[in-house]
Image (cartoon, rainbow, N blue to C red; front, side):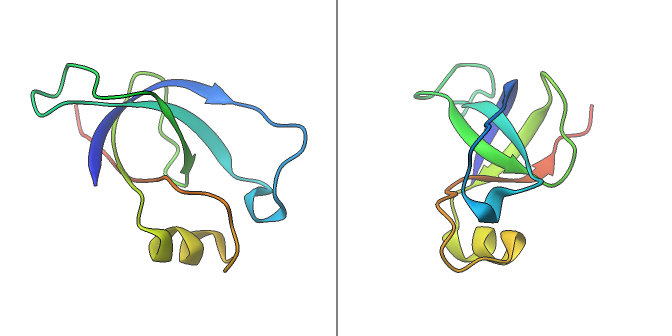
Length: 86
């Protein structure tokens, strides 16, 4: 689980069937200080309706993501599991 900031949205005209109807976010993982970027931005599936510049918690837990999407063979790695209150 990592803290991240939403920096944008992604649109795909063709995507894996397990991703149909899901919003894709571009998120920047953050270092322990909660401000500094930590690595490259990643794509995450969003089921919580996070918005631009929101602080979110993301996970790369494959089992949880497969359960969320209802697919055993989804290529999705990251998913949003929480939004930080302001």
